[in-house]
Image (cartoon, rainbow, N blue to C red; front, side, top):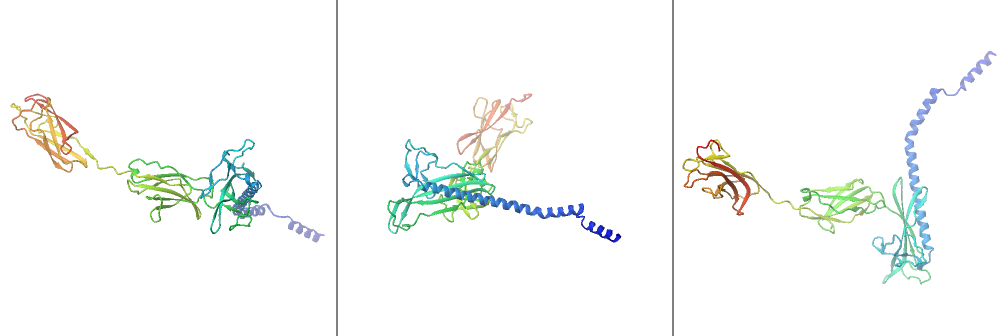
Length: 418
């Protein structure tokens, strides 16, 4: 019995299962392995969703094409008063099939764009176009030989903005067979997925503040949501509106988030033409062109300094005293300066309180390079009037007075103050 009991005890221990510690360690190892796989799992789900939406978009496009093909040939087209009617479509522009300027009262018009279709929780926008297509054989062009049906489906999901386009030729059956390259061949239907981004919208250019507007131009643009997602932008600019090869400059590699840019190092007084190029991988689309003329560089300026009148007495720059004979008791020194591009020919006129010319006036200022001076001598036969004298700088080249004025007192001999 003891041997049997011991054997049963060992069997019970071997069937006891994992301990708590072993279970926790196992769960931790499982979490470490599963964490990196979660991102892959969710990415796969998102990719599958995007692929499924694209399949739905293609299916809706095919359904819309077949719905238009089911309409009698003569009724396939739009009335000009239908909402969303455009006279041309595509590039190069093709003429829209018009059934007339306005629909009969008995015809209820629907917009040229069908109502959005919600499928899989995603709204799909439907745009329909019907245009004339010419046909050509080896010698002749047959105008408006076919109607072409186009359906463009756009939608946005977690993968971004997407577009599917489907085109189908519609031939007027029973009206004779067109004897050309497609004679006797059933109309073909093709489905294409937009690989290029939509064209950016370059806004009208507003000049920058001076002096930046002399060598810089600020650009701003927007990117419509349709088409493939933009991966980068480039700026092209030229002094020629046609952007000939070898005569334009490219600023490339701008991030898709950039919609403003200042182009620098331009030449003043020059007209430039600008375009924005949007890239989606190797595919691209170009904006409309905008032009701007850089401002001219401002001409040289001249800045006039203040005129100084100085004597040798303690009154210095404010006044001087007369001798008993009415002559000044000292010489006066005139000094003046300029900055910038100024004339080199100036003189100073001086008048007494009665507006009469002072002795020796005008006084020619000597010097150059912006530093000028002259001496008003105290000797002479004419006496100076007592009172406030006005000294003014005069431009000899333009024969006109400047705005530079200085007043100086002449006092009587023996005056206690001046």
